[in-house]
Image (tube, rainbow over all chains, first blue to last red; front, side, top):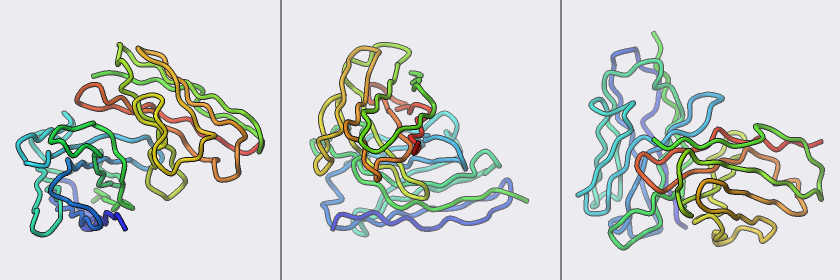
Amino acid sequence: EVQLVESGGGLVKPGGSLRLSCAASGFTFSSYTMNWVRQAPGKGLEWVSSISSSTSYIYYADSVKGRFTISKDTARNSVYLQMNSLSAEDTAVYYCARDPNTSGWSDDTFDIWGQGTMVTVSS
Amino acid sequence: DIQMTQSPSSLSASVGDRVTITCRASQSISSYLNWYHQKPGKAPKLLIYAASSLQSGVPSRFSGSGSGTDFTLTISNLQPEDFATYYCQQSYSTPVTFGGGTKVEIK
């Protein structure tokens, strides 16, 4: 079964850090661009970051640039999101999502999603 | 960034109804438009990609159309499991952006 499972969310104080993980299974992880998408409570969806299959292309939303770092470990079939200098505006459910294109390029489409992990930034 | 505007923001419909949701891009995005739906407490699910292509496993009552700046998602014969929030998303340029969502509720 194709699956993405996020972990690492929790309660963190403003200015703090958190590292999210997303474990992939059921597909050839190394062939896909992976993404993080977040959703603040009661709000819509916001793309956060993407990393290409080769890790050659990494992109961030302006709202997190300079504070968040995406990475992947192909041996562990996992993608990570290191989040620093967190603020209340970062409070959201964070989803890991797969791009379906395996050619090395990205379709910027999200065909498989994890169940999400909640990040709450509060003092 | 490309702004995506959905309308309506919510609607009430009955089982068996035909429902249409529109999405407008702030600039032309060709056919780089995807549709998702999301049920409460669940992850979004891809329904339509490239404006009109049905994702594998998605029922044929879902259809998409449009190109350029104006797009439509149509659900024919609305089923109980279709009550959810629907989002459009442009995949034309980074950063990808989503519409604000359309909540489809039971009348």
